Length: 131
Image (cartoon, rainbow, N blue to C red):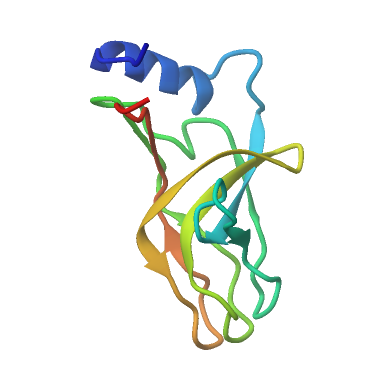
């Protein structure tokens, strides 16, 4: 049965991600970028042009408190690009212990065409009301 109550959604999201995460959730995780939906043949970006996953603490320096059933990250920066990335990203993945644990669509797709500062993204997690 889906969570229809925002308070329940907030509590569940805060138990997964952020400073109040539960004991079964990791203290750190990695963020990766994908072309396409990881659950439907999407693939992580190739490691060209300086693309690499970003390690983050699972705490309040990465995640804001859940609000209205949505958990949002602070602005996250990827490493500087050493050149053009071969693919654009429209999804992100959250990796725990090297394995994909969770994922979502990026609000704004990421494209890197030249060497320079790495892209920045904000992640959002929520419960799908259709599930």
